Length: 334
Image 1 (spheres, one colour):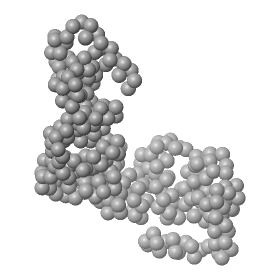
Image 2 (spheres, rainbow, N blue to C red; image 1 turned 90 degrees about the vertical axis):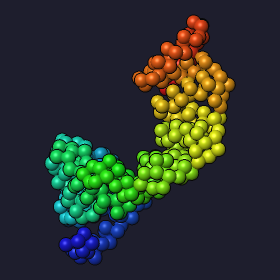
Image 3 (cartoon, one colour; image 1 turned 30 degrees about the horizontal axis):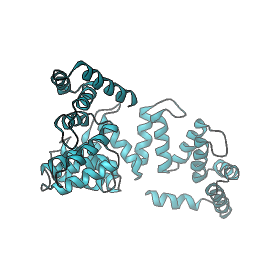
Image 4 (spheres, one colour; image 1 turned 60 degrees about the vertical axis):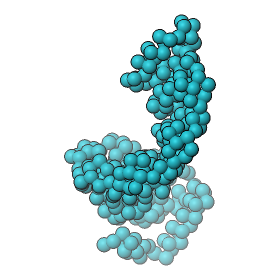
């Protein structure tokens, strides 16, 4: 029996007065009149109304109109799930998965996720896929992961679309197929998945799976950069420095590197050191270069310490102390 038919069947079991009571409780809930909604849902839930059981579970899990009671919420979700409500089954699975209102139980969690996923509930399909993808308390199975990610992706789940791109680009349980990877990354990128945007930009640069196009690469790097991805901010800076997809502009590159550094991308630190050392987009400043090389060295970047050693050989003791102080101050603030 499909979920749609099951809902219709179950709704037929509700008396006309039950419909009115349920609608009144739902209206109270939507109006945030939680105390009245609690009374209405409680009466209906005790009569076995699966919609009331689910909503009452929400109220107890979130403390709406009542004290939070996670154990009771789990019981109500289970009652609703046992009547075929996929959202309720997903919530039960999630509570066992995360140990919310109960002890962690991965087998119980998987069971309820699967019940929900098989009824077409997208978050549960993603959850099942991720269990297989990561091999969480069961054998890792990229084939099963791909199947469930595809179900969720076909319903528009962006993270599933991105991970399908990874599966095809990294040949995880399937032959490497960069064209399929590109198609999945594109779908996820259009939904503002930053990792997909970053990977898509990289494919446009390399020309793997798509015709090389620096203009497209820059636009996708910028999309990810504006959404806060530090690595993408560094990549935008590098493209400005190289004149790829745009006119060469060292000043613009430095601005992007500084933004990436603020957001925690370690590779931007060495790049800033290089630009200050060579006066690219900024006035040459060996002390500022030393600062950034020291910051890079603190990230345990392999070439950074050598760059520090090379530069300190050219500086006075006072200059070295100043550069180290600037690096220390920056690190303390970040």
